[in-house]
Length: 63
Length: 296
Image (cartoon, each protein chain N blue to C red):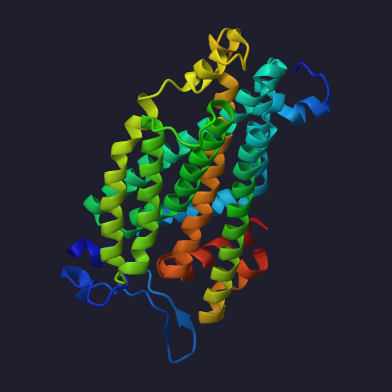
């Protein structure tokens, strides 16, 4: 990498707003999706556990 | 029709009737014997679902390692792309690194969902529709991200948010397909009909895949215009020495991410609809426990 400075890198040749707007939203949404999925999985497991506690005791311990 | 009974995992009232229904218990619900022990009917296990369930469990066992691998691929692709780039190329390089994998995945996921939709319609297995549904929200997210990063790149380099190119239109149509598919369960209450309608919409969305992949020269994205404005190095515009492989590595990371997200979601859907429980709940979870117990 041809580095001038960290500041130059963040500035992105004057396109900082567009570049970081795209990059942060992309990785931010991906992180949010994972968090939503993990929460959804947890709640699905605990609901199934309420329906039939004998079945899912292990899964609840796992999560 | 007997297929539904033999693979019976549709919950819709009256959906599961047929030749085998008299011989095979297809609801798979837990039964209590007089002694009080819970028994689960082994009959409704769809071997295909068994395979999906095993894949999901295997992925979840190694979830941390797989997530680390995904992060490593993305970071490696980004690092390799920037390693040789001069500062004038940074903005375009960064935008490409998020825009192109997003666009590819938006198309790839509708292709994957289309595959399961077609197989589900032909095979009449609900597990195929579950796999189809698991891909739709992630695909929608990437379609949105492709449009978002495309719009920002367009605004930055061309000064307009939106230009009506074939890629933009295809991505917009893909987003519409994804959103429409996600809205179907809200409109159609009966799961079997909803699955089929969703499958048809996804199959219609397949028409956009070749447009996304072939109608554009990907590496040319914005480069000619930006080059004309003097915004980037002419060498970059001509793509001399711009390697494709770092972009491919980054895209592989995105692909891995999407795979993991879809596997997690297929488990969520299967658990919420009760398929997980009925086909494998008693069997699968116990077998899983037994296996874990055996291996210590």
